[in-house]
Image (tube, protein in one colour):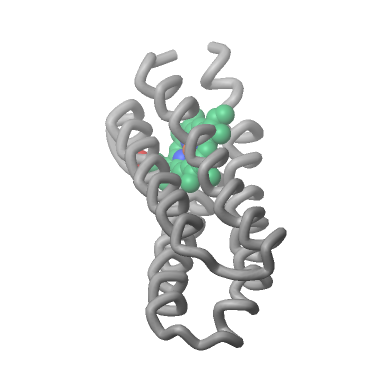
Length: 127
Ligand code: HEM
């Protein structure tokens, strides 16, 4: 089991923590705040780093269900963060107070991808 994959899993879990804090803080306050975006960006950066490590560890791109879901969820997360920045800068009160609804949906899809990593990858992790 390459150490790099373990680092990848560790970083995916750090991404999970930052992404969840950002999304659920938005849900609880029912309002998009600037610090949610900063925490979100840390989560996104960590997610990219983890994916890059996984890519290096397995030596290329593979098309398992988990990998496909992983690429989709990173793309969605990237769109989600850009959307949050646009929403924040537009200063539309309605969009700022509605943003948390879409956030939990995208977060849910991302969670499926995270959990699928254990289904797809755990046997490689314990080999
Ligand atoms: C949302 C979180 C995650 C994302 C976005 C993600 C993303 C990806 C991507 C894009 C790949 C393909 C890399 C390539 O083809 O070069 C991949 C592969 C892999 N990931 Fe994840 N991953 C996540 C969580 C996890 C977790 C939690 C684990 C392990 C517990 C894991 C284990 C693996 C393994 C072993 C592979 C190699 C291919 C496979 O067996 O499916 N990943 N991941």
